[in-house]
Image (cartoon, rainbow, N blue to C red):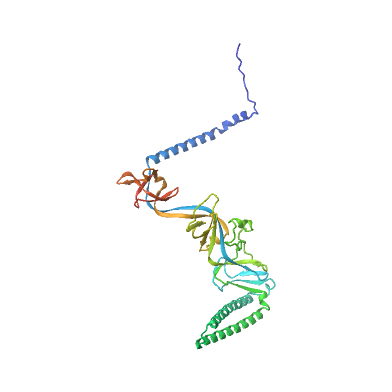
Length: 382
């Protein structure tokens, strides 16, 4: 019996037929891709061969090996929030973020009712009077303290009586000047304190209008660093000159230090350092360790610069360098380890290569701090 061969044909509308029609158009791109892949593969082989036959040379120099970790940072500061005594307009007398002294005027508030009544000259007069009244109140308060101190002393000498008399007369003079200033202010604007208010810094610090809602945070709160976002902390609000009675509109950052709460990831368990460095926007800030919580994943540090990088945001992510070692360094690939000899590197003495034992102090993926090699020694590695 004869054998029969079956003949199969492709339907023109089948998937395989459409693929075969499309292949001639892909020939050139596939050829270019194949040639490029072969070229890259051969280039890697050539690079590996050259590196093996001609090892690189590095001179032992001085350097630092650092170990760090990305952390979430929450900034805690001593901040006095300023509230408006009445609704109106705030006019700043200093720039945002200015470091101010005690007794320095930072802003003036003018009520909405008196906005059209008080001209520039009137505001200047009231500003001058209010500034002087503040100074008089501070001086009178100090005189009262001095009089109380003298009264507490048991001695009853002529010198004590003379000093008490001088302070009493000085206080009376100040009260007389104060009464005259109040009279002058009333001549400028009747009931002026209901329409005008001079904001004076009662302590040194940084004046800022960037309120973010986190001014009340303190170390007693056991919230994670990301909690402010969940509690309505949405970043610094832009300054608006219009203020409302009883609402906060600015703040005074007191003391020239702040606390940084650094939250480590859940899978990281490290020993807290005595000192650390925080990298923020390419800048390095030195931190002093303060405390840690019971989980050892929340570290508290003290920072003393109050740089603008910290004032811009309440919480952010940054790179924390918790360990660093400085010394003679070699490339990490130059190290070789054996059980019987320990760590060694390949060096050259008078042109002859030899294996030299070293003690590794610290290392990362790129560099290793070692002992046992003179500065300037040539080290070979692949």
